[in-house]
View (cartoon, rainbow, N blue to C red):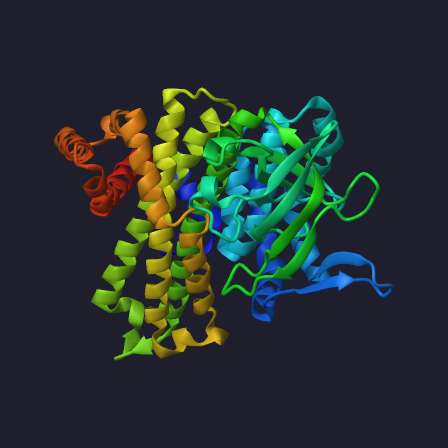
Length: 483
């Protein structure tokens, strides 16, 4: 890789993929960020948690999130470029994830509203009743400042991993709609005009099979607020997305799909976000490398720029190779998802292959982003810990990416489940065979098969090393595929 390609997300994408969809749009978007977006993003990050204005001057509840006007200009720019609408016009997710990569190179927090808006539009288009789609979907696909935003609210105070036990929001039928009552503890993009919400229909089983997915507007049909925001979270990063605690009190909502199949819809939504998280993680790693490179070329020690010292130069080369492998893994998740995102349950074998690759990608890329950002701070030395130099932000952003959309533990256990129940590891190794060493494939398959024969507790307790090695192996093979 030529060093200069690290400084530009579009140049890096071109080097990795050769042919890039909507290239002119991407170049214009990158120019916008360099010209106007970067200082806005830096200001928002330093400002911290936005202010929640709960009441107007007459005491009426409004729950307005107050960012400076420049933030809204920056946010709406990505929607106008097509980070949501292109998926439906082009019948492909590729352009959306490419735009997400560029966004994340500059501000991974801003990619969160785009991701959850897409993750609202997709299930609405796939599973919404025709009258509901006609009313709400066009609002999410607008190309001007009036575009609506979406949100995905699953997590409650008990946590997000065990949704079957943690979701206590209850849904009651009320004619052509449902009334939802409960609380969402970690509601990203609070203030959105629409949200997809996990809730349990009254009388449904108290497990994950009892959950359904609903579309919940910001306003009731009579124009009053349909949900309220208790407070906004003070996070270490991703400050360009407001995350709050949301209260639902007989909030009007519309069932998506069939109530008894809600868990599949919830997982589809989550998969869209997990792939986005992988894309964002690679972009953050690239940004950390790019900033560290700029510093290393200018900082002189022992008579020459520090990039010319052998050890540091070798570390840069190794990190660049890891970045390429991580990108190859994340992009394979995008490619496979693009083939199966229109599927509904029961799913194909290719869908289960995608699931395993998505778990590997989400786990591996987030870990790489955190390690790369930490190393980038080390290149700066002591001043790398100072906020004015900016490297601290990429470490803060990377640490959140490691946790959002499922922690590493969750990816390992879900990956183990899809290998055990669907044989996804066999599908993966067959998929990799044209570019992999046959002996290495056989050895990896033997390791996995032996692991799957362990007792349940041992199988879970010992999965980390195997999952890490499988992710690393997959990333290296896919890098050779791109080359």
